[in-house]
Length: 57
Length: 264
Length: 219
Image (cartoon, each protein chain N blue to C red):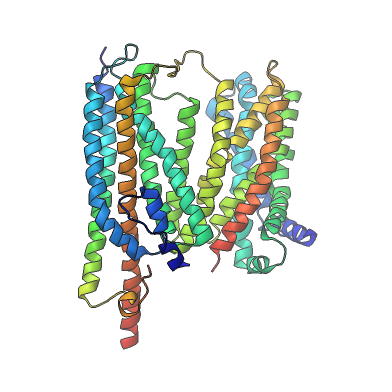
């Protein structure tokens, strides 16, 4: 008996999970970048742009 | 504290990535600049390795005993390895959060948790798909499977905790404590599950160990393992970058609201 | 420290403290099991120790979220954070008080429930002994979960989710030891001693972790 079904399933599901991870990370990144750009155009800048040190928040 | 750490900064391309990340912990802005430079490279190398790994894993011969199902190993073993490595990365970041209070360490273990859960899920699903033709059942309460399942539950608990707390830095510190307590516990859980399993070992289960691994299987396994590891780091860095952006957006929105409030 | 112990005990037995809810829950869970698996006395006596242990584990987790939350609400948690004693010691005392109020009643109630499960005297004694040795470990490790979730409005369910995977070793060795006492070939002492060792280990890890979490959950 060949086990093609199980092999295909495991590779397929792995690909599905990994691709959805990649998709999530990329879409999330794109959305954040867009939000940052929107904020930028509306004239809000990071504190570090006016002060000196780089700070997350 | 910050400038002292920047001194350790070396050429990022020659350093191994973990070290770069830690030497650059000091400053999220530098981190962002760095990721913008190396992310395409990492993604490219990962893709290349996956092409080679997949080619190797489908062209090498099957095992005489297990037939083609041995190919499942090429995704199962790397995923299982990553599920453990990811927790180690999270534990190291948790120490970074609690001891040095670096914002980047906070971001690191927060971004790693969903990735770890995903890879653990892959390990569980492929293990189950491997078990069905080999053992004749989808799930056995085998010691290894069971401890990986417990690990999966721990990842999900951490994600749930992170989602439940809305102040990001407090969430990071609190979940760092939990990560470390869990890290100390993992060997105990493993040990007790082994004990429990030898107590209840069903006789019919065929164990999949022994010296079946020879060079024929080793190469694809090795390449796939490296590919998976790189994939993890690529995704981790990208997710960290997203998380930093997310925090900036929230901070700037809050600032905008404050400014708007002042003007009125 | 003694004062803290007495104060916590008083608070938990007072109305609204919820110490007896745990025993009631234990009683209800164990009483419901036969309706699920059927009234076969042989089967019940075989799975009895396991059911008692699972019931005790769940009931011990039930009241854990209140461990620090009441103190946070009335402000005494801030006082504890400012004390000169190490916070871990304070947490240890609070855990002990919590265990006396909720864990000990479970241990005392277990023989009665063992009779319902048609367990023999040796099995009942073994379950009681292992519960006595094992439930403190659940309280200690649960303290970490309670401290982590202290700031959450509805942390109760989350505490259980976070703590249950960590409590698996306690369950395994508790149940193994109880079975080893009944079934002949297996020796009773090794799993029991490991259980005791786990309790002692968690008695250190739990308060230290909980203290760390409490310090960080502030501000």
